[in-house]
Length: 141
Image (cartoon, rainbow, N blue to C red; front, side, top):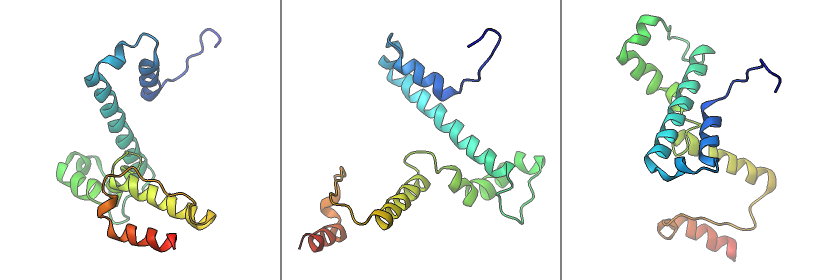
């Protein structure tokens, strides 16, 4: 880059650089890796919630003011427990919103491409999913 030109670098870019660095000191400390992951998830949730509020994607009957945002009860009941809080977690791996989106993506691929030729799962619980076993047996015959 030319001199005097500054480029914004996100936290996730810095974290990737630190973890992929040839030095390897950052990869030896498990607590540091969990700290990076936690900070990244907090930033993702904050960013998603900010976008929802900024674009007025909160329910129509709710007016957001500074005093209301300072009130923890308002934030918990209106923003966190409602649809806004649920959708803000869609990018956080492991959250219910994330898996709902992943499931919808799978169903869309099945509708578009047809049923899969191979079905592979890494879950330890597939033996207790009686509906899954019955469906796979029907497909096998």
